[in-house]
Structures are given as C-alpha cells and as structure tokens.
Image (cartoon, rainbow, N blue to C red; front, side, top):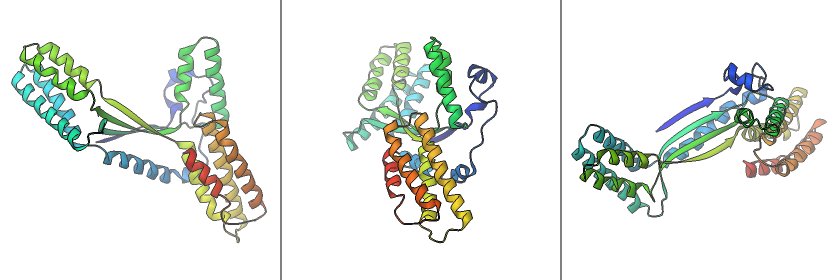
Length: 295
C-alpha cells in the first residue's frame, strides 16, 4: 500500500493564502538549472527510502486492519454473528504477528510519501520568517501559523501502524459488548480502536539532499586536472548552489547554525583551491562526511 501526495508549490495555494502571507511572492521563484538537474536523483533517493519502508509493511497487519473495518460494517448492518467471526479473524492475525515478533511495538500497514517543496529563494524565506515573528510578537498566532506552515522543503515518508500494545486488547473488548447486544457501544469501541493507529514520520530535508547531490557532481570536476574554462565555471556554479541550498536548510531549521558553519568553511576552501584551475582528490571528502552526518 502506497500513496504519494505533493505540495510542490506552496506559493500557489490560493488567493486567500497569498493574502494571508504578505511576504510571499505572487509567482513561484524559479529554481537554478543545476538544482533542476539533480531532481531525478532526488526522486530516486525518495523512492529508495519509501521502498525500504514498504518492505516493512506486514500483510497480517494490513489484513487485520481491513477486517476490523469489515467488522464495523457488519455491526452497521446489524449482523452481529458476522462481526464476531470477523473480529476473531482480526485477533488471530494480531496474535500471529506477536508470536513471530514478540518485541514488535508497531505493525506497519501503510506508507505514504508527501512532498513539500517551497519555490522561493533565501531572501523570501527570511522575509517570511520575519513576518511570522512579527505576527507572534503582536499576538497574531493564526497568521504566524499560516506563514510557518509554508516554510518547509522536505519529503515526508509517513508510515501508519497498528499499536500492538493496545490494539488487540481494544478489539477483544468489543466482543462482550456484542454478546450483550450493546451494538452502538460496540461500534463506538471499534471506532475508538481504529482511532489509535500510530503514524511515524521520516523527514528528508530537500535542501540538504540537493546540496549532497550537487557536491557529488562537483567532485568529478574537482578531480579533473584538465578542466576547460566552461567546466571550471560549472564547478563554481555547483559549489555556489550547494552553499545556497545549505543556507536554505539553515533558514528552514533543518539543523543549527553550528551544524552549517563548518560546511560553509569547507566549501569556501574548495572554491578558493579550484578557482584558478586547481584540482585534487579528496578535497570534498570532509564536506561529504559532514553532509551525510547531517542528512
């Protein structure tokens, strides 16, 4: 089970949203060409991580959830016997999961990928942050909330799970209610159990991922001792944009200032070394290591 939703352009959410955020430009601000180039690799990384999560989805858990909803439908139709038989199946599925993995706390049943991509530059993000702070300063919490909701550039992999510590017991507690003819109470208890599903989130900050991919592309050019003038310019573009992406990540709060300062320093050193045509191996190793740690 998998679903991908996207909010690729928070700027075009609608006139009401734009009116509420005065610092938001009327049109999307275009992404630099080198950023657009790495988009297929961004998608590949996202797909890979989502696939890893999907591998963890348990068929028995998916079936148990579907059967719980079937039992609820049976109760709606006043078919108590069918509801009881279905709940027995649910219990069996859950007991099988626990027997196989006694320490498992959450049984995954669904994976969704949600994309939030802000088409704005760092100056716009700074202006939006200032607007949110100003709104909070003046007690305008809802205006601040609307602005802050747009300040995200990330891929979220959301996994829905059955909590094994509570869900089986909640399902079993419905059985005596059905036996006693308390159908409405049984339905309410079953709906309550369905409401206890737990969602876990894995967040991939897009600016950091893009910086990582840009540095990877720059590495080949950095090691080329026979770079042409055009290749040298492209190398500088890649390094400049990697820094821009890191600045965006810092502004959006995907790390603290102390996390980014060493990266800026290392990028500056490499830019200086390569500006006159210099080349060498391993010049970007420190940056790659720090980015991997941050990512």
